[in-house]
Length: 325
Image (tube, rainbow, N blue to C red; front, side, top):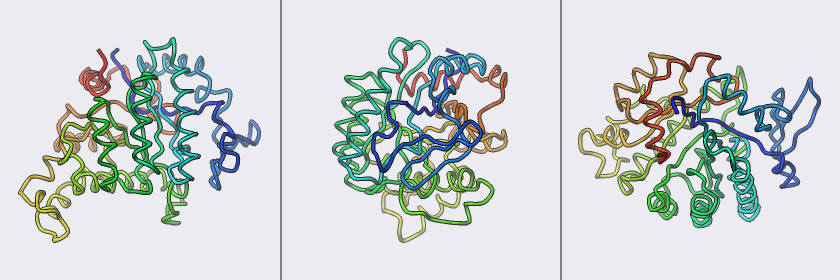
């Protein structure tokens, strides 16, 4: 497996209208399709009868793009991190069962990530165990924002479960207004919600992970974050200085260099579109914590044939992160 893709979302027919009011719901027509979750409507993206939902078409599209192995993940629009927890638990179980059935028989080409009910970290821990032990999923995908917050002490059990099960945690943001309160109407323009907004969310998540001591307490926890960690490569020096000098920093991170040492424990998908950005990230964390992400079928996936020169170290890293033999 020369090209392993860890950033590839999917939507399942079985999940549609499962939550009634919340959806997910598909509508419109071939010229004006839409996808609705709660009060959020994504317009102009067709899911049904495309590789997004049709597994046969997906495998064909993977071959055309040059992807040998792909781990399917929930569409971030459908995390449902802020709905009633009982509804979220039911939805996650159904989605994960569907994921396991979808990849059955395609294990040489496809793996799957679980979605978790982050409203209740204890239930999320139980679902993670079920998905990895009983369903054979490779780990879990969650958003950057959910009720407890990424560094809250209530998350300790879930992080310990990831370590005990020896599976990775992947973090990818959702568009503002779907999961959590609507934050900044300036991001409505020019797709800034997907570029600036996502990067801000990823950077804030990393800041909370590091300052909040998530990896300080769980050094064996493997966390991978999307899009090169957002703005982290550019801001790492400033955040490191804050760690050493600001009164808000915990005592343990005040030691010179500790912030950057913690940053090197994070994994990054390399979906950043610019060599200079990757070079900067590489100068901070090295190449052994980078894996290939394509945002498969998205507006920003790599062009056909562009993966032919994918460095071998990326697949080696992915095999280590995903515990592939």
